[in-house]
Image 1 (tube, rainbow, N blue to C red):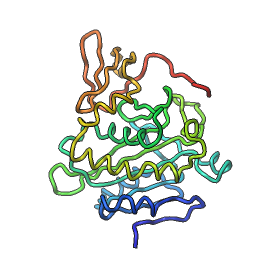
Image 2 (cartoon, rainbow, N blue to C red):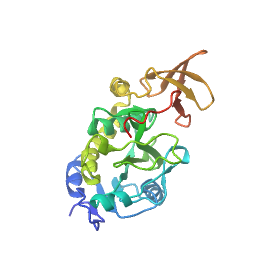
Image 3 (spheres, rainbow, N blue to C red):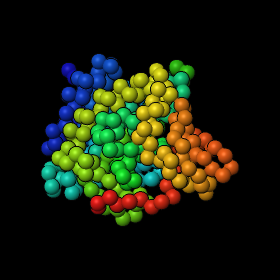
Length: 278
């Protein structure tokens, strides 16, 4: 019996193929697909608080209360996709698994790098947890942790990812949205998940054993902010200079080099985002 649950959708999710690819590297791994939930991250954090720490990939065709960084809402509205191709307009999922890295710094960067390398060479990374296409946000990452065992340093990590598959309204958004169909037309949510899932698990496991330092050069090659004039949430202006071996953002300011380590600090380019054909 495999670890595939909740398959009641009209979509053909590749849950069994993902399970077969992942379970040799992550024993006890399961895949769950739900038609609707408030938030995949919220659900896995609820389970962790109830003592459930098994590795799981939880996929939602629709989220009613999706969350992004700093408490922002992640909108997941499948209406356009269902009408057009019996699909969904965004892909939202969370991966939960116990982790015990020596240093947690840079985990969101490692996750983002795995996403862009699995999807398309034109995608870039905006520190600390966004995937951009030509200065527009295509995907977001939210990582949360809970106490997962009595082992020092081991926690249950919940890695949530939301990806725009089709164009979506920009009203009320501070950064214009991009969509994956601009680069990969016809790639639906199940196919996108199949591209991402197994490489993501392997990337997180490599991060657990090696940390972020081996990924520094690859991240900087995809860095959307490299050499860009930016402003921080405290009003400080400077020029982004890539990330260091721990994944901290380096910003050259009038007062000298500032190293940003907190994901609670917002970093925005000073120039307005471009529409690039929308």
